[in-house]
Amino acid sequence: MERLARVAMGQARALLMELHEEPPVSLERIAEYIGVEVRRHRFARCEPDAFVHKTCSGWICYINSNIHIPWPRVRYSLAHELMHVRLVQAGAASGSLFLASHSENVSSIERACNIGAAELLMPDDWVLHWWHELEAHIPSRVSILAARCEVSQRALSVKLDHLGLCQPMETDLLRMVGT
Ligand SMILES: [Zn+2]
Image (cartoon, rainbow, N blue to C red):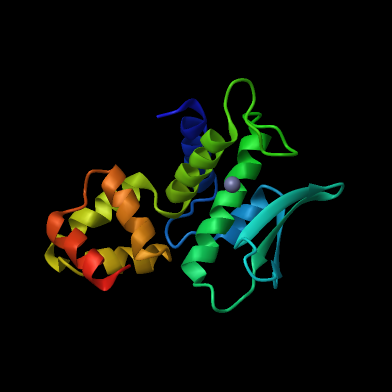
């Protein structure tokens, strides 16, 4: 795992521990804890689901209030933006353009924020525990866990893949329903 991804992973885990959060994680609570104000905003078409910027009075994260965007997608984007802030606060990235320090580039910081966001919403230990607990509920455990984490089944399947847990039968089902 890249250095920045490890930092993001560590930051996500520390936040969950400090706030005693577990899925479904309250991102609003985490945002408040790290000093980010979350505002809903109706973007024009093709705008991002969320973006964060720093003002003279602090961090503000705008999330897209368009009701046609699935809530799990907005949540994932918010978690991603919070990780950008956290990496800056941890001194691992610079504030203005979210550029990584030293030799890292923008794509490595984006990857790190995705890994941190996935950990924030679907902690490895928690997913591993419940994946095995729900053994009797194959094949619906993917949808059960995704609903508990308030993430899309696709986001969960990426996490399961990273953990080496995605089983062929369940992967096929995910493909069939196109999630
Ligand atoms: Zn980003």
